[in-house]
Length: 54
Image (tube, helix red, strand yellow):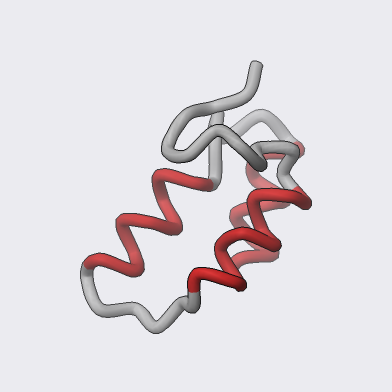
């Protein structure tokens, strides 16, 4: 699932993965904080909690 989100961002289909991952986590999808942080780093969103990085 995270790979799909990262690819969607790469293709310009979504602006940021962070809000989507945080939403999934809050709705019960099991994602550790470490996994979310790693995905944010891969998406160049580290340090922008909940914000896109244009």
